[in-house]
Length: 50
Image (cartoon, rainbow, N blue to C red):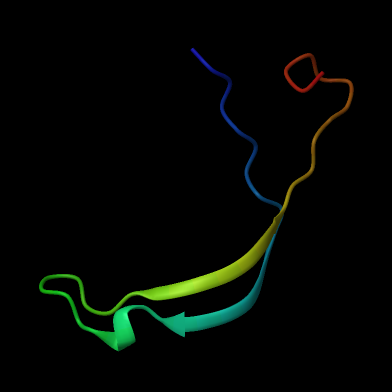
């Protein structure tokens, strides 16, 4: 079993654009393409991250 990843501390969204020219998919609707940076914090002394 692999260790559970730490949750992101901050998500910095740079751009939001429609996917597939804004096509609305049956049952779910339109999707977006996000360009983002996920920021994490790790404990350097934790054996799981060593």
